[in-house]
Amino acid sequence: MNESVTVTHAAPAASPAFTEHHLVHRTGWLRAAVLGANDGIISVSSLLVGVAAAPTATMSSILLAGSAALVGGALSMAAGEYVSVSSQSDTEQADLARERRELARAPEQETAELAAIYETRGVSADLARRVAEQMMAHDALGAHMRDELGLTDELAARPVQAALSSAAAFTAGAALPLLVAVLAPHGLTAIAVFAAALVLLGLLGAIGARVGGARMLPAMTRVVFWGVIAMGVTALIGRFVGAVV
Image (cartoon, rainbow, N blue to C red; front, side, top):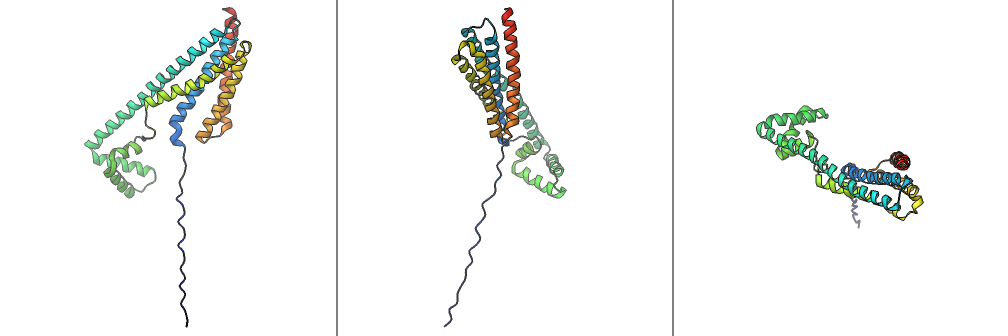
């Protein structure tokens, strides 16, 4: 008696979905954080080195100058970022309001405009028209915001967030050289702050490059180079002007 044997083949396992990991969404807060911390380190370190290099400098004058620079710099960064990003936000909102009016006034013209944008990106005329019509039916303002104005929710201007993050980053960067000035022997304050600032700037450049997915060495070289220039110039000014005063 023959027995039939049924052979079943297992279905191939579905391959995991491939996703790309991009870092462009970090550019907004990363720029503010790196800029704020870099300014905090260079500004306060340069001021501390310049004051400490003066022949008549005292520890109280060094700490007073450093503390004033930290507070004033943090508030200046916050105000500057708030005003700058608020202007950007006002421009974005004005463009969106203008686009809303155009969509209500001439939807057919706006559809043709959107289709023309897709054509310039390599889409055939017929397909571009169909895509534009579907995008207009789904979210007309959102489609024009992204494809015509180049605006996205992720990169939208947020003045308060930018101000707070810049002030916090500046304070974090400025507090470390000020702490070094407090702990260093009086006669070695300028040298200690100078050396600590270079280390901090190098670390900041490396961290910024790492988070942003860029090469570390060029980023570290840039920030350290300009830190040396800034502190070197202020040290010369403190030495010569302090001697005269």
